[in-house]
Amino acid sequence: MNSIAPVWGICSFDDIKDNILECRAKLRLPAGARSVAVFAFPYLLPDEKYEGLNISKYAVSSDYHDILSERLKEGTEILKEMYPGDDFVYFIDNSPIPEVEAACRAGVGVKGRNSLLITEKYGSFVFLGEIVTTLAIEHPNITPGVCCGCNRCVEACPAGALIDGKIDTDRCLSHITQKKGELSEEEKKYIRDSGCAWGCDICQDVCPMNKAADYTEFEKFLSTANASVNEDTPLEGRAYAWRGEKVIRRNLRILRNDYED
Ligand code: B12
Image 1 (cartoon, rainbow, N blue to C red):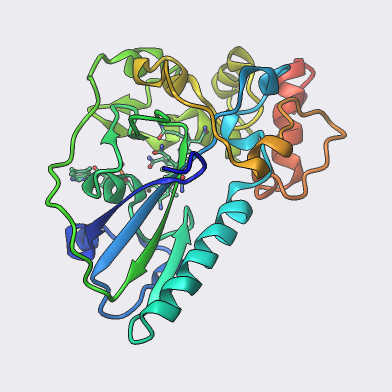
Image 2 (cartoon, rainbow, N blue to C red):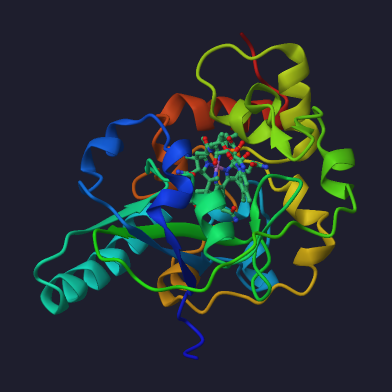
C-alpha cells in the first residue's frame, strides 16, 4: 500500500445512526445514507520536528481540517463521477458522524480507554474523516475491538477526565485549553504543569499502543510544522486559531507564569 495512503474501512450508516451528533453539519447528511467510508490520516512527525514543543502534536502542522478536506473532496468528486446516481458527502471533525465509533465499526482500529481510536500502524495519532454515501457498499461484518486496557491513560490524566472508557469533557485538559474567559486556579495549574498551551497529549503519550506508531508521510504535515508557539506566531491556518487570539495568548501567558486576571 502507498505509505501516504490513509488507513480506511467501511461501516453501515445504520450501525451508527442512533448516535448521530447534534450539529449544524447534520443538515448535510445525504437522505437515504447507507454506507460510511471512514479514513484515518496519520499526523505524527519525526522527533526533530517537535523541538521546543509547547502545543499538542495535532496542532503542530497547518490545520488538518483544511489539508484533509482537500483530500476528501477529491475522493468524493471521483466517486460522484463513477456513481452518478448516488450521493457522496465528506466530513471531517465538524461532522454529525461519531467518528471514533464509526472507525471502530469499520475496522480501522480499536477504541482506547482514552476514548480515542487506536490504529495498528499509526497508533492514535490519526485524524478521522469520512465519506457518507447512499451507495450500499459491501463490507465485512466487524466486531468492534477495544485497547489493551492497561489503564495508563486513565491514571495519567491530570484532572481525572477518563472514566469507564468515556470522557468527562469539562475535566479534559484539551477542552480546558480551548475554553474562553476566566480559568480557575486549578485549571491554570493543569496547563502550567502540562507545558502545553493548546490541546493535550498526555493520554496518548503514555499509551503503550502508541510506542511504535509510524510517522506520517503527508508532505503538507511535514512541511508546515511549527512546534513552538509564542506571542508573535501568526494564527492563520492553524488549529489553535478557531477560538480566537485571546485564548492561545492567555494560555501562553499561563505557561510563562505571568498571567494576571
Ligand atoms: C467534541 C470533541 C472533543 C471534545 C470532547 C471529547 C469527546 N470525546 O467527547 C474535546 C475538546 C475534549 C476533544 C478533545 C480531543 N480531541 Co476531539 N473531538 C470531538 C468531536 C468533534 C466530537 C466527539 C463527540 O462528541 N463524540 C460523541 C461522544 C458521545 O462520544 P463518546 O464519548 O466516545 O461516546 C460514544 C461511545 O460510547 C459510543 N458507543 C456506544 N456503543 C458503542 C459501541 C462501540 C463498539 C463503539 C466503538 C462505540 C460505542 O456511543 C457514543 C457515541 O458514538 C470528534 C469528531 C467527531 N465528529 O466525532 C473529535 C475527535 C474525537 N477528537 C479528536 C482529537 C484528535 C482530540 C484530541 C486528541 C486533541 C488534543 N490533542 O488535544 C483530544 C483528546 C481528548 C480525548 N481523550 O478524547 C479526533 C480523534 C482521533 C482519534 N484517534 O480518535 C476526532 C475524531 C477529530 C478528528 N476528526 O480527527 N475532542
